[in-house]
Length: 410
Image 1 (cartoon, rainbow, N blue to C red):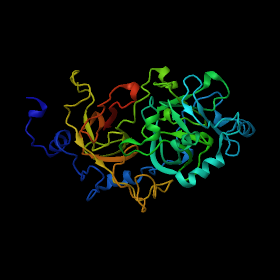
Image 2 (image 1 turned 120 degrees about the horizontal axis):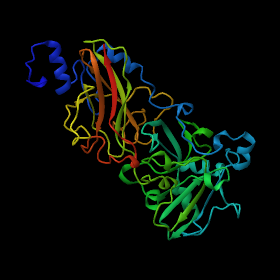
Image 3 (image 1 turned 60 degrees about the horizontal axis):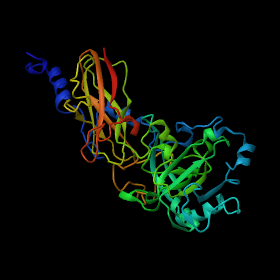
Image 4 (image 1 turned 135 degrees about the vertical axis):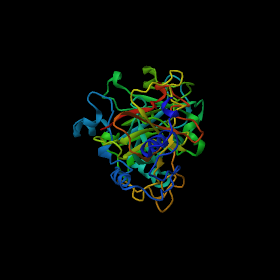
């Protein structure tokens, strides 16, 4: 008789089986941000210890390039090369190799480059703010989440009076005047001029969480592309080229990366306690990145660490996953006030939850288990019904592997 065929006469064994195959005992599960009617104290405690929703600038993780990194240059050097608000200028010109036809280049040669004062003046009329999680395509965990503010790129491009042959927008930032250090990216012109699927616009960003961008975050001005990974949101922006090229020129393309892959939906753990005792509940918390495909559920599954799984089911689609609780939007947001930002109302409440391009927290209480070594996994189900890592399981289009965490019960 197999383990799953044994009669459930032991209450503890019943609890373990129910967890593996039916529901998470001891909690009110909700999906889509509903509030649990009552949480066990063990779970309420770890939820209360979750970090604030928005990340302070100083606590963002940094994966910047450059030797030295432009953010580490001495103050006088930053001033000299235009990396201060007082000296920053942006050139918006035709691509010299495949030029778009424009009527008024914003060029340094004719003293017409856009300066910071002019950008802020545009912001008085056109500025937008939106929440976004910033994630590196090759790391697989968010670097931070904030409210990004700036002027839509298209409003600056219109200043150049574009006429025709504009198919792609290339751009790069300051790179120590060393060609080998240049980091560049690009977008289809259609994405710059029009916002699909109810997305915010691509912006020339100068504020994060209501404060001026620091040098570490790409200040004084960086690109921010809402639905994409961080490599599209180039820091220390200095040049924009309007091109008739039909294809990308991104630096990341040289690393065998998918340069057109938007943010994916996936889940990972935050709090998995150690020193767990047998037959005592184990509180778990985590986060889910909400990509362009949205989020409907976060699920967890725990199994004996030595349990083998069929090789023809690499994504554990037939495992007995159970729903965790997607926590509702926080009452207090932490380091930023999202009031009136894209997707928020005047009372700082999101119009839809979970919000695309951001994150949510989730929680679960694992019932008491016998002593042993276990593997805990978590995954998302997106708004289209795709279970992580689908529909794009390919590593070079952004990491979204199903996380496996060891859980020891003594």
